[in-house]
Image 1 (cartoon, one colour):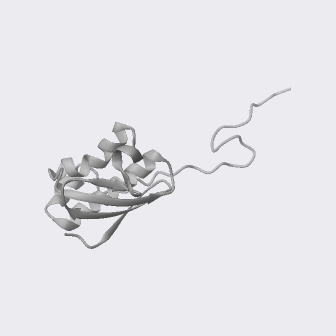
Image 2: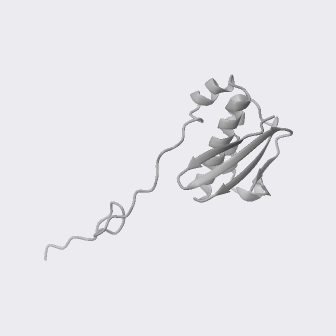
Image 3: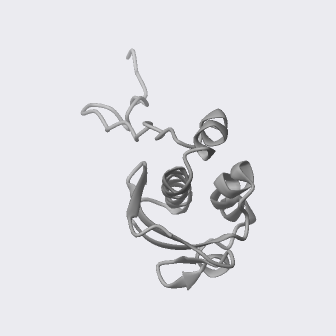
Length: 128
């Protein structure tokens, strides 16, 4: 049993994940995972650490997520779960690391520059 909260981050989303042994119930912001992440792609993303370590259905997950969008939130919860599983059993580290689940994705939105429409897009150039 883990009595520690693990943090996962992605873009502007921050997830605080609590893991304990149980039946595999996942609760995010006091909602069932099916209600919070209606797309199957995001739910599968969450389960990736459990599949990699072959512990699907052995742990209950409680997560509080805020900031960012749906995709960033699911990735942040995934990182938190992977870090918690590594803490539970250090033998999981090699399988999690080979899948790239312990790495924080550093990509962020590039800021808008002045004199341009967006970060890289420019206004239309007119010679005359």
